[in-house]
Amino acid sequence: MDMEDFIDLYIEGINKEFEKTAWEFWLVQYPSFTEDTFVPFNEYLQSIRGLKNSETNETEQGVYIDQIGL
Figure 1 (tube, rainbow, N blue to C red):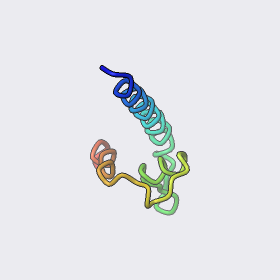
Figure 2: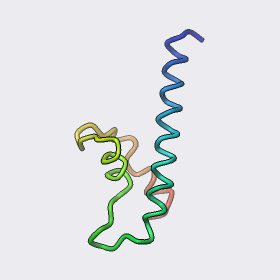
Figure 3: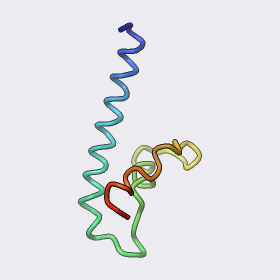
Figure 4: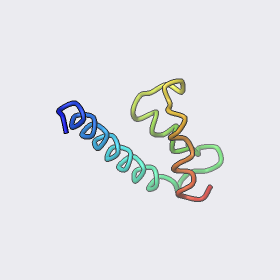
């Protein structure tokens, strides 16, 4: 494995760990959501990362929704 591949894998691992932590924080807040205050996980993740909607990777959308059965 060359250095570039290692760095890519390392960064991917950091991103996955960040998403996992964000998912756990979102799940803690989930019971207190109402119809007016509900924030889908993808929007929550974008807000804590500071991303705009146009920067979202479409393949990631729906993954977490499937995990909780919404």
